[in-house]
Amino acid sequence: MTSKISLNNHKVDHWKADVAASVEFYNEWFLRFAPQTYIAERAEASAKVEDALRTTDDLSAITAQAIKENPSLLHIFRMLTAPPIARDRLSGLASIKKSVVENLESGKLPKMKSELLDKQLSRVVSVIDQLLDRQLFEWLDENRRPSRQERKRASSVIADRLCGADANPIIRNEQERRQIEALSSYLDRNGYQQIKTSDVKDFREMNAGTYCDHLIVLVEDNAGMRQKTHTSRHGCKTREQRCLRFARADRVQVGR
Image (cartoon, rainbow, N blue to C red; front, side):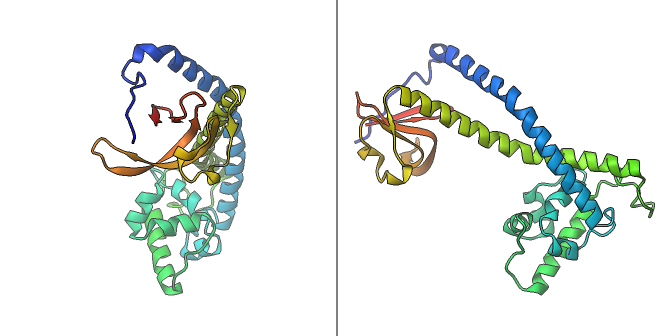
């Protein structure tokens, strides 16, 4: 039997200080970590863009064959448009599955007949060409080679676009790792023992004084429907109450 217990989730005044401390904790970390991540990503992005310019003859040869020979170029090609185009939007405009875009950007050719792949890549190239940021790459319409300054400026802009797209997931993943590390440290100091998530078959059978992270459990929504939820923080059994706690960013759920 599961009972619902209110944990002051509607009494904001009771945890304003905790919220303020959490925000400060994040801000201090972000100011240290984010600039370093952005700088590292920008250096890597610049190298990718310069390679793409060489491969495509300064963007005059954005072709299906170029993508077939180097599928991961598609990630850069999406940043060449105005505005930069998301994977979902590209797949929709080109009438292809999103998984095709994802496979290409991971460096893999989709498993399909060569004729079908050529048709889909041609549609992708057509979309990229229609949306190309021609103000940034003005040498294309003028049918000439870019100057050194034009090439450098274009490379910098595209590198910034790539950097923003690539750095944000890295920052989010590092933030999650930091949060889990902080929670683990707190639980360890208070006598809890971490166990492998793969060893937990039923959270109700966890031993008192243990915890794990990234545990998937069934919960009921307001309509009484069962759904799977991912405990992106921690699940732990207290030694005093022998109950399971899921500490998440927006709430704490307790089940007996």
